[in-house]
Structures are given as structure tokens and as C-alpha cells.
Length: 94
Image (tube, rainbow, N blue to C red; front, top):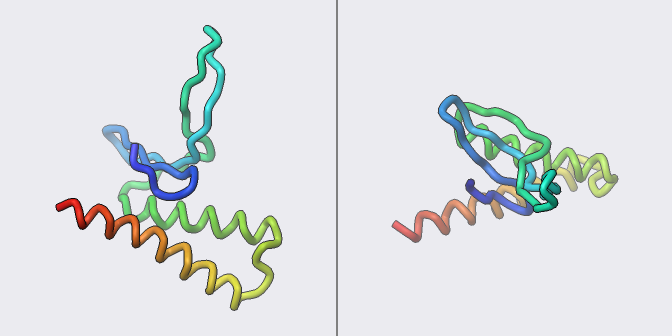
């Protein structure tokens, strides 16, 4: 799994990528396991990143943290830069 930002992760299976929020749940045996909730199934990593950004922005609007387009744009730029910075960190590894 690839950590994107906050509790958002990208995973994959043979057919597509899976985007979701990492959560924990109890198993029947009483242990805890990780799983992805609020899942979406994009076909590319770039689309997966768009979904993460869109979901985070939608949540901010729903919670009333963003109430006008100027603030929306400012928050979108900040969030996009955070995600791009993480991608830049991967580039440093090369």
C-alpha cells in the first residue's frame, strides 16, 4: 500500500487501483486488522491522486471549513502542493 496523505492510501489488485481511508476493525478472533473504507477503483495512479484530493476537499466543504471559492482555491493549492511534495520525496530516492 502507498500512503498518500492523512489516512488516505492507494493499493492495487490485478485489475485496478484501490483508493481509500485506512481503518482498523476487530476480527472474529479478537485481533485487529487494517482495511480500506470509502473505497474507489481508479485505473491510474494519477486518477487515484485526484480522487484523494477531491474527497478531502469535499469533506472540508461539508464540515463548513470552506465556504467560498477563494478559500476553496487556497485550500486546493495547499493540499495539491502537499501531495506533490510527497511525490517529490519519492523522486529524491532515485
